Length: 214
Image 1 (tube, helix red, strand yellow):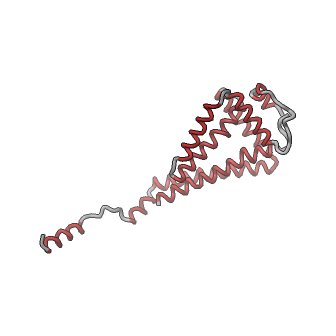
Image 2 (image 1 turned 90 degrees about the vertical axis):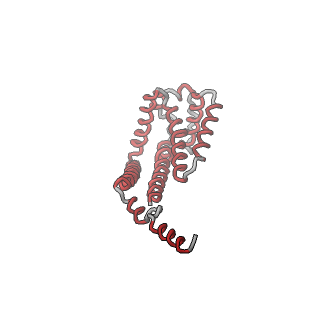
Image 3 (image 1 turned 45 degrees about the vertical axis):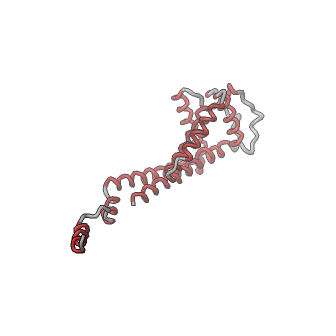
């Protein structure tokens, strides 16, 4: 191939349209209506969640902590009736299984890995293999939870049998295990801490999607 032919081929190649996307086009893609809509939806979810969380916090500070506590307990109670299980079992499923699992899935989505999902699902699977009696396990876990939520009040002098603990009527109508710290600690540990964690994770998810689009 002589020099003239080589120069001709190079000039023809230069005239071909580039396969790479124009940076200006990439920026305009992020401004498309569908991308804007998704971004607004994510931000809207985050804002709504924060407003709801702040509302609950202000309500409890204003003297409505019993109302917030009863509202959350009522939701769990209704869910237990819907699924045909006890209030205690619903508590254990929500706070010891569903909430931690959703955090693991959200964290994996943020960091684009699958480690926490695999580890948590495997851990729960192995745990269920070693649980001989689900009812007794829930009663034991609920006792431990009550001990924590009543700290520093010692509620153990009012021992409940497993049958009593698993009875919705007895648990929902009993004030024996509720020491003076129970409602306050329940709101902090079971309501506001999870809400804060969810708010942070949702913010990171929304921010990650926005960064990826850019």
